[in-house]
Structure formats: C-alpha cells, structure tokens
Length: 525
Image (cartoon, rainbow, N blue to C red; front, side):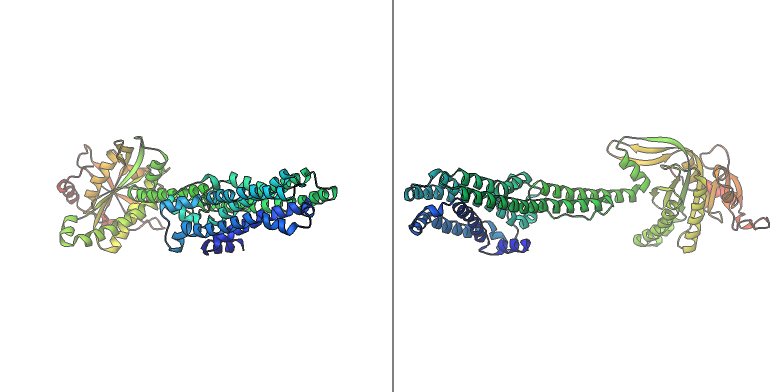
C-alpha cells in the first residue's frame, strides 16, 4: 500500500504538492492538539472566531505559497522522469538534495508564521502566555519540517537505482541511517514529550487540562513511537535480509547476483558493495576459466593461490608425447580451416584422456601435445594412468580414422615449475624424461601399435597394467648414449588360462624403427 502511494506521488504532477500538504497538516494537527489539551481555546473568549481568522491569515498564505512552490519543484526535480530518460549528473545530484531543500524551505515559510501568529495572539488575548503560544507554534513548525523530510526521503527512494547508475556508488549525509533514526525519534518520540512539557508549563492551564494532556500525549507517544519504530526497523531489516540472501547465494557459487540499490545511506553503499563483489567474483571466475583453458585447471589454481614468484621443484613424473604423422602432407592437402578442425578433434581426445586420468596437458606444439602425470599434483602412481591414457588416445584416434599418430611415454626426474620473467610466466617441465618421450614418439610412428614406452614407466606401473605391455626392442634414441628398452602394448590382453597373447602384430623390423628414428626431423625438447 505504502509503495503504491509512493509511486503515485512520484509520478503525479501534484504528488510533491500532496506531500507538502500532508506535512503541513501534520504540523497544524500538533498546534490544534496542544491548544485543545491546554485549554487555550476555551480561554480565548466569545470572539474566538475573529481571533482564529486573524491568526490564520499568514498560515493560509504560507500554505498556498508552499503548495505552489512544490508544484514548481515537481517539474524542476523530476522533469527527467516525465521525459522518460535518465537524469543528467547534475539532475541526479540535485535530486539527492531534495529532502534537505524542501525541509529547509518549509522551515523558512513556517518560522515567520510562528512569529506573526504569536504576536497577534498575544495582542488579541493578553491573558494567555506569549511564551507558551510561541512554543506551541514552534513545535508545529518543527513537526511539519521533520514530517516533510521523512516523507520526501521516502518519496525519492524508488529513483535511487537510476541515480546510482548515473553517479555510481554514492552516499548523501541526509539519507544516512543515523539521520533517519534521529528524525524518526524527533517526530514520533520527542514531539509528544515536548508537547506535554509545553502544556504543563502553561501557567494558565488547570489541573484537569494537565491530567488530560498527560494521558492523551502519553498514549500518542507510545502508539506513534511504536509504529514509527516498527516502520524504521522494517526499512533497515528488509534490505539487510535481501543482502543476507544475496551473500548466501554468492557463498554457494551463484555469482549472477545483483541487489537493487534502494538508498544513498550506508545500506545503499553496502548494496553497491555486494554488487561489486559479485561482479569481481564473476570476472575472477571468467579469468580462472580462460586461464585454466590455456594452462590447465591445476596450474591455474596453483598460480592463483600462489603469486608471481618463480617457483618449482624436482619430482618424478611420467611424460606422454603425442605427434601427428605426416602433418606437412596433410596441411598442404587441406584448407587451413579443415586441418585445424582435424587437429582440434585430436586434441579434444588427448585432453579428455589425460585429464580423466589425473594428468595435465602441459602444452600444444602445433600438431603435437605434451602431457604430464605427477605434476603439478603429485600422484602416488603416475605411470599407470599415463599408460592407460596412451592406450585410450591411440584407440580413439584410430577409431576416427582421420589422423595417424605416434605416442611416446617416458619417466624420470624433471624440473616442474614456472619459468620466464616477472611479467610473463609459463608452467613447464624440463628434463630427460620429456626429451625421451618426444624421441619415443618419433620412433613410434611406424610401429603397428603406434605407442612406445620406456622401461622405467613399465617398471613403475601397477601389475595389472604391466600385463598389457610387451618388450618391443632396444632402440638408441637421438641424443641418448645408451639404447633404450622400448615397450609397446599388446593387441589383446592375456587369456584366463595363462596362454600368451598373439604378439605377431607388434613385430616390425628393427631396421625400420632405427631408420625412422635416424631420419626423422629433429625436435627441440
């Protein structure tokens, strides 16, 4: 109900004038109530109509002037709303000053009326206390001004989201929680007590009038104070509840959260902060996702958790290298788009097989990929998943029939960490195991099973995985002083009765392998 009234007053041409009228009626009600409770009206005499008419001249003039100025202010402050556009920066700042401006003007109109009305009443009814009369009218003026401030402050609240979009996170002292609490207390709590004090201080009031004033104003103070406190508490509790729910969603990972900024108080700044928090976390997650796609999720987490310092260590890993056979001929026979599409389908297989076996695709080198098992996350057994990934990659690539590949797997101690400079880092692995895997990949291309594995990997693998591999040959790899024992996987696993699998399909001329290794283009690994 209140929200609908606020929206109506905000949009209607006479809305601001209605606010001014309501506030002035509130001040008038305070004055009339005091005059009645103190017995002031009964002491005016038979000529009370003439006296009231004379005293009311300025209030009526001031009331009309205030309404007229409010209609003018409606166009001055809310013209952008009528034009259905966003306010300019100056218009937005002017709007934030509206509660103070309207309140100050209300006081400026009321205070001369207090002086005039007090002087005329003292002249026309000299038997009444001038000080009490001045206090009565002053309290009415203050009540009207305070009521004006609270209503106008509530009136402009629906426009704050638009103002926030124009000015950004902003606050205004007049809309602070402290100001609202003080004004609410003054209007709803302090005013009945001040009215009671004024009545009791009137030397002309009799005991029945004082008793009646004490009972009535105490009841008004309790009722209005409770009602105002409830509204004030609700105005704070409602946005705080919204903020709590928003933060609960953020802690659960729901980052598409946006809280509507409803004020320029501390709560409004807090609402802005929650929106900025969600936006920053969304950006961080986007960067984490992009970063993870380029360097791997584990490396991205390690970098984000660490810093920009160059770090690394030496550890035992299994390195798997995959390279396409005849990539030059393929690229020359296909359009660049078609060739890249084939490569992407191959690399998708490599990434899936590696990550599902707890490995890291460390880098793509054109039509080749280097995968690491055991870094940056240490694995109790990094040989078995490397062998399992190698077989899966070979089987899935063979099933597609698009490309021919060679896979090499080697194991050993390597440096695993960041290299580069303070402004550009790259996580990589450096060591003989990586070089050996690259050499084995070249040697594996003419092998029927397309996989060659060093003996160190087989020795470190689990027994059930070792049973799927057989010694192929001892090959002297480029740059290696001694021949390397190379293993390849069996076409079929051992049978249940212990019979040896058929390994004829793995038999290939050693001379052909050595020729392939010797004549293959050198690679810098």
